[in-house]
Image (cartoon, rainbow, N blue to C red; front, side):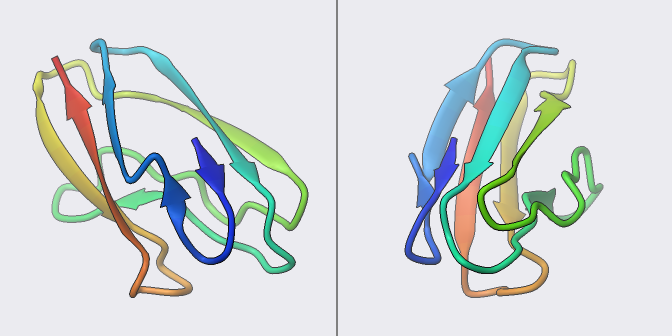
Length: 80
């Protein structure tokens, strides 16, 4: 997953349970990838030009996420 121009790409990502997801921040400011609701995953702050990884939840389903710093940034992680 890439963060560029204050947007997640792809905004909808499908992965397998427990799959490792790598986030690359190509913006000039920090961002997070944080699941809403149960907080099933959270990268913490990802600095400009940095990468972070997290493991997808082990339970199948749809997990909406946001950047907690810029809450207008939204995406969905689908685990199937």
